[in-house]
Length: 473
Ligand SMILES: NC(=O)c1ccc[n+]([C@@H]2O[C@H](COP(=O)([O-])OP(=O)(O)OC[C@H]3O[C@@H](n4cnc5c(N)ncnc54)[C@H](O)[C@@H]3O)[C@@H](O)[C@H]2O)c1
Image (cartoon, rainbow, N blue to C red; front, side, top):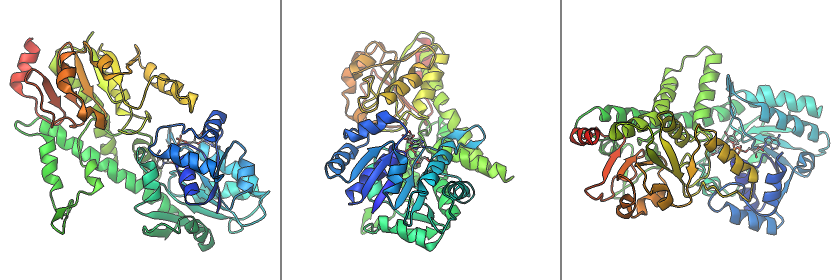
């Protein structure tokens, strides 16, 4: 099929490259010319395993094109997928990018002769396709829906696994204006073996929010248990949650083998969730409910618990060091989760800010977020720097773990990047000013720590003997 994808970010570009790999002819559109130029050169504007390879092969096979010319892309296509951002606005979801893209697509539909389906992959609150997008499309195209199709096809990919998730989805959700719209979109994925839910536009919109709200709720639930463990002698949240995971309703034993479903990684304590989706989607759903005079105390609590987590990590460091004023702190991991360079709403940024407010000097190291200008998309690099350097006092982004840890007063792990587990911690601790490691993700608990290293993790009541020693000395 011939497809236009409007918005070439994490979702749009991944969808475009994957759909091209399935044999479709895809035109990805963006309003940022540097992003389009980078894609045309086969460079992914962000780090995502496997994406650059798919991109190069699709470009070489002339199955993928990048352009700023939305009208041309829509006119040459049978389906237009909207994948622009839906950030958090002041009073709920900000639909301005969706509205602008929909308006342009509607105007382009005037030049389309055949049947064409407009699909939202952007995460939008229930009713958006019907009450926001449809009127814009009808007004701008001069046609009634039915003459063109309208669908909502929410995306469930996870950054860091985007390509694999897109190509092997758990389920496909197709919200459809009418059967013809849905049939057209279903053809895109006809080689996929997963369950397909064909439903109303609003159900499809709501399924995405309910899914993300569940994940956020599991994380905040785990973090609340961590807080209780921190105040309880002889408990640690890791052991407690491991005991919870072994409930066979959560991890069934099949043919003698225990299956560990991916959902268990959300039943895990840490220093909070971030990223471009969970916080904004839970907040969008809360705002949507409020507009309907519906109370959502559970979702409110999910965000309240989450907001406290980064600060609780800094409290742990302060208790250990006595005072943070003038202390050099090394923050390990900046992206909101491993295997991505995405800093949007990353807990690391809040941790850094809280440390700085208490007078600490911050160094940071992340295996993927680097100080190097991002050749593929120079704009990203300045965005990263703005986010980092916009914090009072600045942050020294180190190129190596040694530079980050030499003479440091504490290493604070914020993102559980896999490479941290394989480091020679004995050697690294020996170059620190004092060997204090604070683990905000419970990721290093299996490391055999040398006796002189003080290792503290969230969700564990601090050893009172250690604390009094630390405060005394
Ligand atoms: N990132 C994720 O992991 C993820 C997962 C599932 C769903 N989503 C949802 O998908 C949507 C997109 O998210 P993202 O992370 O890919 O966003 P993003 O910010 O990475 O990309 C959005 C892109 O759209 C472009 N754009 C904005 N207005 C445009 C217009 N009028 N015409 C053409 N291009 C335009 C921007 O320049 C940008 O490149 C959001 O609604 C998000 O909630 C994201």
